[in-house]
Length: 322
Image (tube, rainbow, N blue to C red):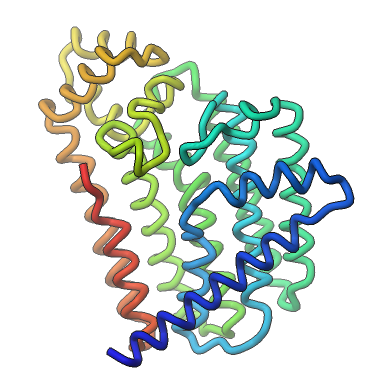
């Protein structure tokens, strides 16, 4: 128990160092750039992606000084995508607070999103291993491709195949890059890189599926999202895709008519359809398959208290209340 406590203290110290590094990275001579980017960084968030990097590095016995630089770059990349996401989705809130484009405007959102991207790449460029820079640069490109793909398919009812391609790019890719870059930093073997990649990618898919479930069945006070926000934005996610495929012609029409029309009545109707059709059960089954892959690969990491903490964190992420 004492050793677990020491490992936990070490992780907490890494996260504290990350917060200091994030605040330092976002300082600019242009006060407004600092204000807006800091507003987004300080608006909450679990720091899951850099936390994953920290866990992987500590599990692989990394003891150098570049981990926090890497984690800072990863969190800034993620933050920049969130700022731009809210512009595309026309979202008014982010983590329970007004989004940047709501508090300021679209022009500020786009430009400050670019500013945060530039800060991420400054941190990346200071890393010594060019393979890490390549991994993160490729990940940034894939995230952008996922955004464009989602936008190009907005007018059509998304297929399950397209859904998984989009979330693989937009969400799971950065999870994978966070873990792989930390493994590279730790001089991991080819075999270690392989199972680290699989555990992180699976975790990213789990995270996104859970988020999509919580959009319909979560507690808005805890998630920071209004119930039915995806439906309101016309965003088609796995619970809705599964429900549509299991529905009658009449029900399919109701689902299509509800997109972009998130009245309380519509949200309740869609929630009932998701449950009564068996779609929710199917979605949970898919998520649980990814969970098994994630845990199986996590157990291939060297046995340590850091690995136990990582397993606990994964289990906490999978267990959602709804």
